[in-house]
Length: 176
View 1 (spheres, rainbow, N blue to C red):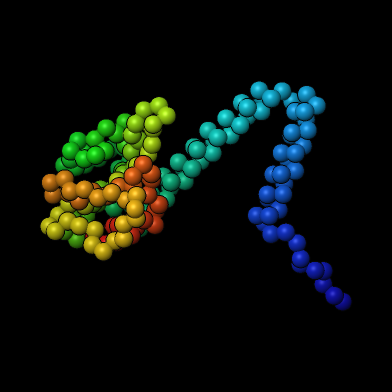
View 2: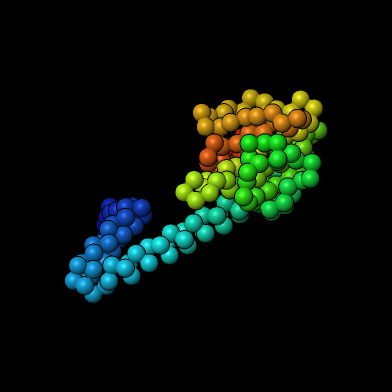
């Protein structure tokens, strides 16, 4: 006659509870010396590596979708030959990834992620550049950690020591 109550933990709360129980069980096994602590350290490092790889793969997928949606070409790790990377503040980039190039109206657009720095000072940065008559990003709102520079005919915008969110890239491209 009466249905069962739907009261209970939400999906995220339930997942957190399972993780907490798992960690408590694991801690108990380590304390009883069933599992050596070094083994846990190796597993934790492996999990971090896998997590980073999955994040990078998801970002690549999102950038490819953005390029397709906006009619641009995903070019991977190559930049157009006419982009003056060596004259920008990203000239010391050790690697370029997820590069996209295309035209919007009478403006040439390039966006990419790059890795800068060495050792513990390594960081990733997203760069969005536009070239053309009156090259600018219009009324796009820039946050306190978004840097803009002018390099010849190119207006270049990048996240200071961080990757821009897909939404931020879309807003910058749409403002051109």
